[in-house]
Amino acid sequence: MFLRPWLFLLAAVAVEVISVTVMKRVSLSGSLSALLLMYALIGLSFVFLATAVKYLPLALAYAAWESIGLICITVIGLRYFGETLDLFKLLGMGALLAGVVLVNLGASDAPCRRRNGSTAMPE
Image (cartoon, rainbow, N blue to C red; front, side):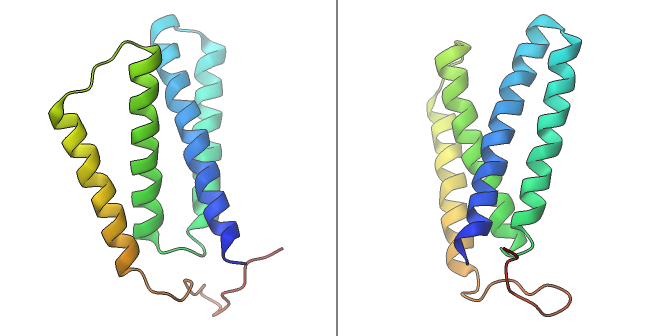
């Protein structure tokens, strides 16, 4: 099933966004428990990303992970932390999205092969 790696990638993005939001809160409060939560979430995000890249091209997965995460974090920064958005930031995010689209178009239609030659996603 080719959908499952994408679900792992989206989970990696979601957990990364939460961890970066916690990171911002930690920087404001200095709470040790929030710091530990942040590290645990970052680790979980990498676990999900590592699972996704077993079956998706590395460049595609990493570019999507970072770009979607950046856009979500930008929205959270605007909404909850009073950050600003200017033309250069918008152009940068547009360039990132264009890059993800181009990497996706350049990705092979076949799923990535694992070292043992298997392309099947475990159930």
